Image 1: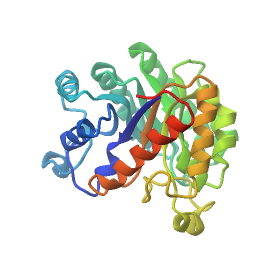
Image 2 (image 1 turned 30 degrees about the vertical axis):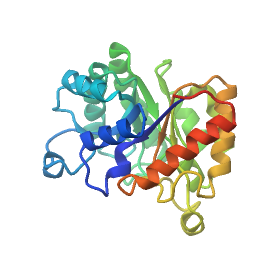
Image 3 (image 1 turned 90 degrees about the vertical axis):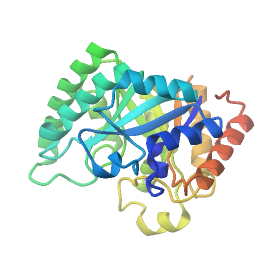
Image 4 (image 1 turned 45 degrees about the horizontal axis):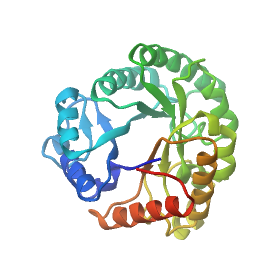
Length: 288
């Protein structure tokens, strides 16, 4: 399996993407995931945001990443597709991200729904809208040979029955799931059972623990959290993560494991990487 991290870890540190590459190189981490920005942002332009704008040349960025020994495990274009603005804003953003991902060498683009029941749409209307959206998205994905993953992060996607419907929107091997161990837990689901149900469709994984305090406060009342504010292994989701890693390994998964936690400019992420490496070693799972 491929150990990596999402650059969200350094949002609060106001790092640039290159700072994240430097951290990865220093800590012998060779895989990374970042968010994609469609447009110009002053905070990104000043180097205070660890994500990448789609106006950046993908081949030049790929060359820079090669110099650090780092490649993308996935890129994040998870604008919520379930709301009324999903077709207007989300679909063109995701399609542009797919073409960019193909050039930069990213195998997957991450997508999702909104955190809450969409205003102005019934559940069936929202599902039909997303089905049409994914039909357009997957046409572009197949042209470029880039996988599109649906992440459990919102009102529909953390419901396993609705997730199953969404994964069947388009009959394509390029449509899969980006499992998130933390979002499934915080939504009140059993992350291990969620993994077992969809293990054949999982193409990329977000490794996210949950603190006891956060679980006590919001579990079952929220559908997703941006990232964990405890190191992986220090929360109440750690045993679930161990079981999930075993289940994935038994089913032949050898893809990306992107850690999502507050980096605290490095220390919490370092602790998380160390825990994940030690856990994979203890479970006898090869990793890089």
